[in-house]
Amino acid sequence: MLNLSRSVYRYQPDMDRDLPVITAIQAVLEINPGYGFSKLFKTLRRQGYRWNHKRVYRVYCLLKLNKRRKGKRRLPSRFPEPLAVPPAANCCWSIDFMSDALMCGRRFRTFNVVDDFNREALAIEIDLSLPAPRVIRVLERVSLFRGYPEKLRVDNGPEFISLALADWAEENNVMLDFIQPGKPTQNSYIERFNRTYRDELLDLYLFRTLREVRQMTEDWMLRYNNERPHDSLNDMTPVEFLQANNRPGNSNPAWN
Image (tube, rainbow, N blue to C red):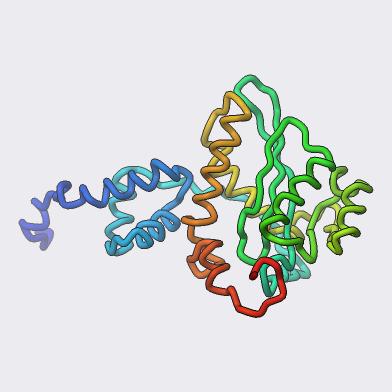
């Protein structure tokens, strides 16, 4: 009556056949619980597994790991301007602050530094208070192994408009590029990084002490720079992208 074969009607999936896929998925998500399917599948491919996306997605759904997409109403921009992509490392760094709280309710801040060229996380400084002199010390520490940037893209926070930071930038020939007030999209690279950092670490765990935050952030940064594939970098990690575009003879300190 239904034109349905008995073999199709009586078919039962062989779960033992999917055990290797289940084990591999759980191993990745145990370390990176914030990954969605796309990032999970690319990570499995980087680890050498050759299952096609349909099989992995079927098992992914079977385990009920689907992440609900957060809908957000956006108004179209009337005059969209593409964010410029730097031609090399150290051409432009983006810096910004974030905040969160410990289990006791005490709030802490993070100071994030990202190289716009390869989206590499250069530093995440964490403390209860991060005044301008502390910001300068972090930038100096990063510059020891990376060299000074040509430009710093910043918002109009009190730490960034201070005379101390302006004097440091002038002494080291670094231009401060201030975005327009109320226009966070002009600093999209660091804003996108902040979202990833919050989704994959800050919102997933409860922290008892600053030491826990610092240790887990350090481990997350290593994975972010060395293991996490980026769509905008042709599915390469920040370190791989930097190495692939490391052209001899470039005068930028980061290439030497």
